[in-house]
Length: 269
Length: 312
Image: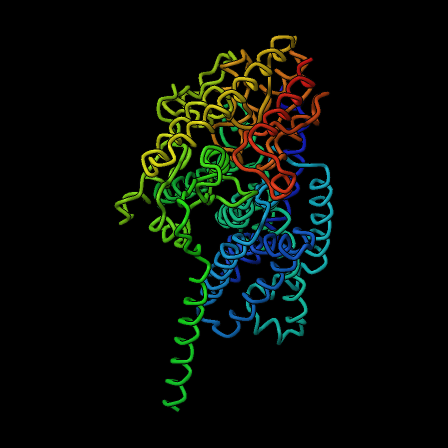
């Protein structure tokens, strides 16, 4: 097929599919913990990290990862202080991140540099970024498989998980770090939009079909992969922006599923 | 308990007040001798300094190394404009913030020069003929008029007129400077014409449509990866088209600009035999270039070198 003769499209498919597998894995835990917006919060914070890295002369990607980890723990911290309104923690950290990024970016001398780190696009991925995504995908997948049961308990109900003898704090700790690293790297590579939407939309679709946690995870991953592949095809042949197209394909599919379920449900009753 | 809270609160308010007043000290110091000119971004700054010479002090609003397309003035810039005598901007859509800022100013004596006035604006469609029409660019103009040295003559003339209006006493001085640089621009123009007419290839692939005027003046064919502003996400179909174009026409160099991300240019070059190189639209210079004493002329000559090695 013509679309696959270009290296940049091949990379887009490879990286896109890798991320479509791991981001919903993180997403389902995040959604169940009522932290759906964490992807947005962290990707905004990572901008501040990039600016900080550039100002201090540290590797900006490292700066982004570090600040993302701090922000993710900040979210965890606030969430525990105000457990009833856990989404508030995200709003606080997100505004802190945007504010910090805004102020710090004023101090960055060379915006060319800044822009090249801000700017992520699924159709312009360097080799280094591809390996980075492959590495992080491997770790996330490994952690998700090894901690499968633990994450399930923790995301459902932390208190009973603790009673069942699960090291809740350790599991949360590992998961928070993985989330932070994934978001900071993926947002730089494919853009924040794709990352934050793949975290939630496929999970919402998976929940429409899944009758158990395991089924939901599998359906979420399948839908994320489908959205990414279809989105890339559509954006290639219709000359559309790839990030937005992938997101819209996802949201439209979700709407379609919800509507058909309603109609089917009505005709059954 | 209540007292403690009040004390903490008032301390907080005090801290905020102190930090605000601390910030206001970085406005420009008063210098009554010279005429205070504010320019929007680097080319305007360079042209104005050249015409005004030592009779004026020029302040550039967009800091060095900053991409002017997404820059917006800070409160301190507005304060400075209130005290300025002359404000020079390019116009033609380059500074989207100008109208808003000017309408809020209370400085009635401020003379405003739109340097691009009188230049025939070019539409931003590229001349690369493919079967899709990119009508989303339609109706917009390319603002980078200074990429054609002859347009710079018009801009400098507008700036000169503005200066004479404020400072008729030094009219001769400004006119002399204008004559001097006008000749230099003619020389630059001839260099471009002479060099480019000897080149075999005429197609340049650039990251954003900033070279319409240069292309128009010297018969180049500008193919831009994306629209009028750098750093927007390109669509994959367009990228594929350009890759095919680069392969079919044996293009050796993909140009990107210093102030924007080279990611897209890299991705295209990776796929073809082309290399990437800088073609500077002179939207701003980096600190390094300024230290080296670069200006419009030296950067344009570097551009010409880059063009001639790419199109041989």
